[in-house]
Amino acid sequence: MIHILQSSAFGGQIRSPKKTGINPIFRAKITVDGVSLRCYVKPMPDFYLEQDGSSFLNREITSESLGYVLAKASGLATADAAGVIVLEREMIPADALKKLDAITHGGPQDSFLAWFSQDMTYPNLVEKFVDAPWNAFQQKRIKQLAEKMAKHVDAPMVVSFDEWTLNSDRHFGNLLISPKGRLYFIDHGRIFRYPSWDPVTLGPLSSVCENRFRSIIDHYVPRWSTQLPLKSARALAYNTLSVSFKNQGIAAARSVLKNLLMEEQEVDMITDFLAQRLEPKMYCSFVGVVV
Image 1 (cartoon, one colour):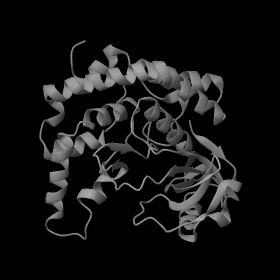
Image 2 (spheres, rainbow, N blue to C red):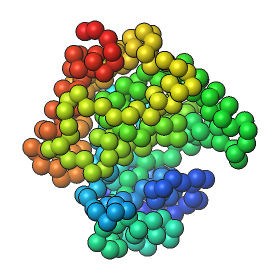
Image 3 (cartoon, rainbow, N blue to C red):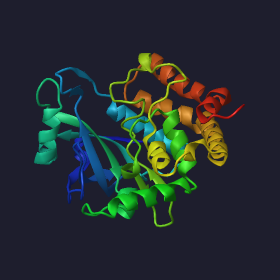
Image 4 (cartoon, rainbow, N blue to C red):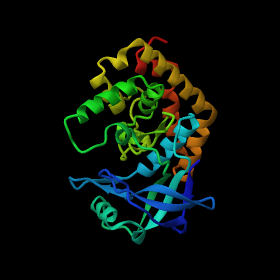
């Protein structure tokens, strides 16, 4: 489940993240079920303004929410707590607010919906194995990380989960690693490729998009994704996803989509699309094995 909170749950900003990407993000305390948690917070505009002046209804909050509950229902490691919170302008750091206003269609908003997830205090893969001022050895570190991930027990599931949900932006920077080596899934804002997706136009069931995690590994470990052991492990991962989706995922997905005020027909379209992509004939075609 995710938590949907009013601005009264906001407990104030805390120390900024060491690094931020192009999207506005900051850290804050948020009260969830009576407990104050340190969280990463990503506010988002209602309508996204593109560089060419066009705009679209921003579904990134829905993407984050859906991706989180699907991962959780599949038994994957995720943040312990996450959800959506309403933020007033004065709650958002000035630098993040400036970025927000620049990508908001129709002028500055008085308030924003924000995705939050509990700070698990684990580093992402780049921070753990690569991060450093640029030097001649950094490329070697990336290669070593790719080789390490090629052998990681969670790698087949990472590739399969993101292929299933059409996540176009899974890379080494949005996977956390615990002290015991387990990979934690964060950042689902690019499922169904881009935040402009629409339930009516999700595309053919056979749709694919670049799987960045797989592409990075294939670049440094040639033919990694085409080798039989990996294909077999991916087919097994897909079977696990299929069973989990039927048992818990469908109900979790329908609940979160309805809580985000999607129409019943739209909810049906999304869950049917996801369910049919988990049919053995379909996922075996993705993996490249015979049913």
